[in-house]
Length: 165
Image (cartoon, rainbow, N blue to C red; front, side, top):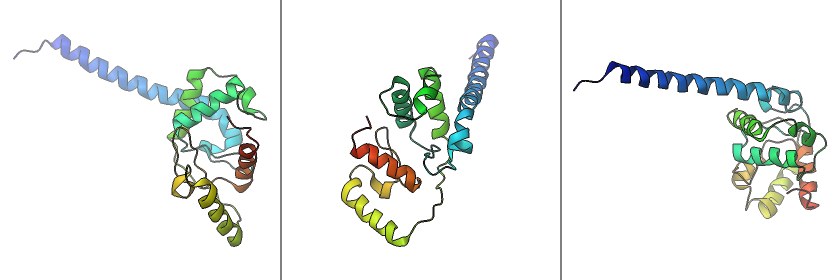
């Protein structure tokens, strides 16, 4: 069987181009995400008590949230204005970038009695959707475990007030 050398060259060049484009896309996604580090911390691990860590979040969930900020359907202090500065495909790249970062639990000073009470409340009210002690996530359900208490309190208040889409 004789294979034309030009066909082999075309296949090899196509594979190399696809690989280069993928690496280039990763660099673009990382560059688009750099401004997020100012609030959400290096690689999406938040240093602030009321700002969520976004490293390791489900890409589909994060894309949906960013698009809600962009179109104004999700309440925000500043994220709505930031998200409007990006095109939808750029928000998707940002979400994919952060979803690939490792989830890093943030340490918080917690009282053991409050942790136990939180565990009880979670089992009673939250575990049906936020399975695995709040670690489960998908396109509709964000990870709760490991987020800072003040951020969780703010989110729960918005949830109870039906302010979240």
